[in-house]
Image 1 (cartoon, rainbow, N blue to C red):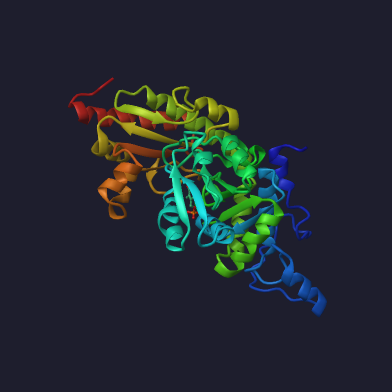
Image 2: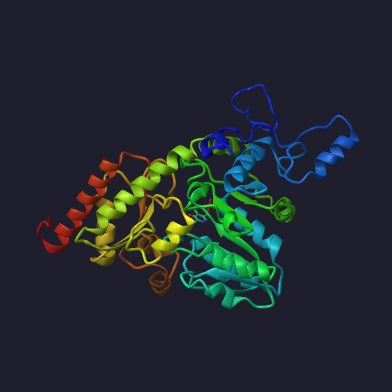
Length: 397
Ligand SMILES: *Cc1c(COP(=O)(O)O)cnc(C)c1O
């Protein structure tokens, strides 16, 4: 087996081979065929790339080949965003009367699908505490069709025991689907633990340059065929240029992720010792309550950390304002460091109570980019010093 970097550079070589070293952009809405039979064949080729771009495009197929190779799955497909990957899969896999299990700590969009969209369509949902490995199996009912997990979770970096979810689900014929956005296939491959479908907001690490919205799904061809059939109807098609940019970003994933891991670890360690900080949520810290589980199923811990300030809401917001490099943004996974204060970002979206249940008011989600580690560490320590100085009215050293 070649290494990850080799796979990432060459796994799409036989997809629409051309003499161009860089893949051409197939900026076309439709493809033509020589004769009726060829055309009819192209129309039914699942995740094909020669019929109509909503059905598939060579630029999609190239990304899919690389993602499937990295995730160690039979196949993959590309969607217009991470949320399109999730909703298309969910619509393909469940019907009115079915039951879906999800996590309490999960990406906001996923939470809305579980709490609002699915119940409105007659699908019941149960949200469990992912840190209890038995919680998923205990929530199974005869109507359960799907389990949605996310590990590490956004923004609290809680870990889900993938084996403990996949085993019982498989025994009950329940499809499991893991959001692998935070980990990336470089740090964790859910399919290796028995998870059926792996999905990503490719907007984040896979693309890595904060210039594309995209999603991917990886898994067995038979399951993806079902999702693809519904994808034709939801029509959340990634544009060929964006697919081309995504492939270009993907090529350097194996180079970028180790730096994100190193920066995440260094920032977590530095901040966890700072007096202004009540605690750091990062699975790479020995103090993380699930550090052993994280070490067992991950080979690196990623660039995202949650920092909780003793001073609460105001201190967290002031810390964000005092940072030199990370800018205030909801994004993550790109080459540049970004940070967000969820409790203030959600003020217009959620009630005080909903915010209080989802995140501590003093939490900052910091997504380390690929800048030099020493520069980022100096920056966050200076910002933490600045806010503890205003907290105590005198500099803390
Ligand atoms: C951003 C994100 C999503 C949603 O992806 P989009 O590409 O923005 O639709 C889903 N899951 C996680 C963990 C995310 O961070």
